[in-house]
Image (tube, rainbow, N blue to C red; front, top):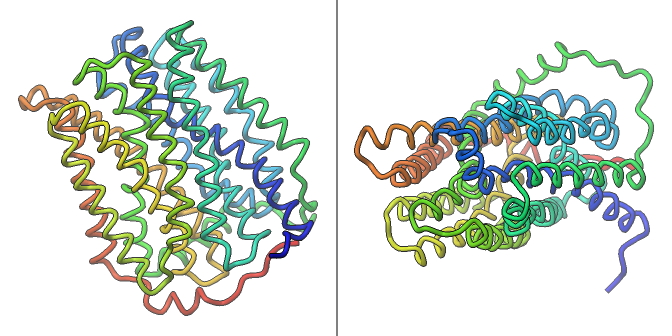
Length: 415
């Protein structure tokens, strides 16, 4: 067994440092799952307001993916992350010092903008620095390693909140974000951008038109709106309120469950990255696992007992790892010259979907009492229904017939 080449070892080192920014992005996008109860108490927030609070991060994050993709193409992953990520630190501090709901939203928006290039930078770095046949495995590993950020918003964050306050929790996350930015500054290297490149925003946006003229793009986007959103809506918003309100868990007990879900969320992507069956049957796998998640959420909608509820949440943690195959599906569905734009659109749809689902589930929770439905029955029933809707878009809208062959053309790795 040969050892990795020095260039590959160097690529892995720099990728791990870039993943530290992605890990903090994961922490910020899931903090609401633990922050929701103390914030609701401190600001008298309704479930709908909590949904908007959690969703504000993802609206900002997802809405800027196209522009972050352009920035990464022109200036590289390192420069783009270094320029934008300080807004993450600023946003966390704004949230920590907020004395109104508007301040909380402003902090979330700043944090979402700051985190916007974090994972896209990793995916582009992988596409440029690693062999094409290793893409699914390396991307799955990156998703798994980056999920360390989910661990921060489990028991550790719950402990900080109980020992000090929710404000201290955001200050701690800001410190971690500053350390990640410093590591990227010192340890990640890339070639200088060509001076001839100019940022032609409108020209670049027009270039996305080619992508949307392909008929299978709508089906891919339809599914991407709801898959990752289902996991994040559970882990990043409703898990804490569910366990505390429905079953009387303490904040630390809830943090322990969130930590366990996060650990399984780390293991899932590398596992499914290695199990990826390839282009021929991958779409069937994606369909099947999406429907399996819908069934699990439908079961969680019922008051079936704390133990079973926790087991089902853990099942979502591991099964959601199949979503890494969606990245491989996107890469296989487009020719090489569209891969970067396709990844940016996919990522944008995925995180706008998180914001959309968290907002919609907040509406469902608010409407539940008027309809005499238990809050979490409405929330998890809505998630299950949205997953079925996404699956229908993916299966019944046109699929990528000719695109697969076009996508097979090899892409050149950047040195």
